[in-house]
Length: 128
Image 1 (cartoon, rainbow, N blue to C red):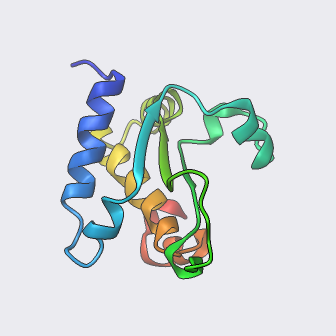
Image 2: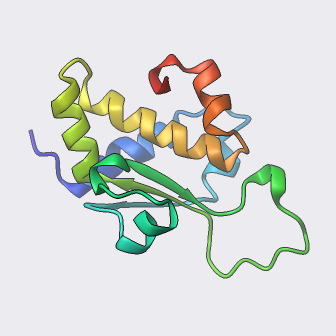
């Protein structure tokens, strides 16, 4: 089985398509980008030293903070980082790759919906 960027995109898009009706329309307005690694700027902004520590990123203004006065310069984007996800999958050894990809997608979209990491951890033990 290949684990290329196309494969990750297929799983990520299927995850968005399977979201509950209340979330799906807003999720479909977010750009989805799958790349091998986060950029140095992303890591610096988050004060992360090791690129393997970042499997996904929501880049945008959460829906709970948006205003009609906002003038976005780019679309809200969910980023998935293939190499760090693959490394976590190999290190864990106890989860299917598709499930890990889906969990990262859901986690990043939760940020789009206004959830903090603590909020997400409270309802999904995966992130504790």
